[in-house]
Length: 143
Image (cartoon, rainbow, N blue to C red; front, side, top):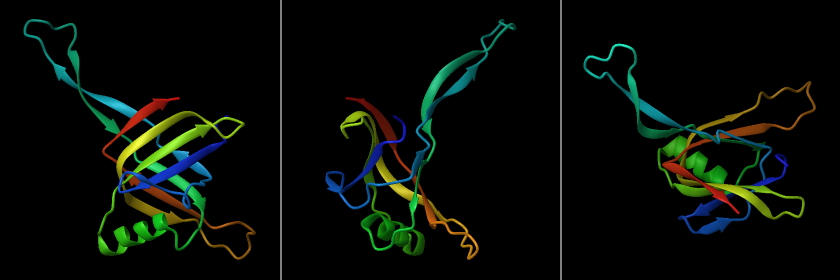
């Protein structure tokens, strides 16, 4: 059921934004543990690889172009005035009844990239905006 999901922005970390919930696509749900190589004296057959820290990809959201919503206004403010208002963002995978099965909580997310699809008078398509967010960390939540 990877096609039924909700994205919830929490203003000031606690108040959910009920307007900006519906997206066409979510990507960037991944993390990686960076390692440090350590060469042990006298050992020439291998190098120790020790865990160092966790790194995250940006969260990428796609939807039809929407103007005047809280999230689109935050992106405009970030891109034009360099003022940022981080939000906690919950991405929830929903079952057929609309209840969450799994979720990912992204802490202190803020805009780092925005784009809109090509505008083509010959194509009968919806303009798609892509919003990319960086964040402090994310937490996997199993419900």
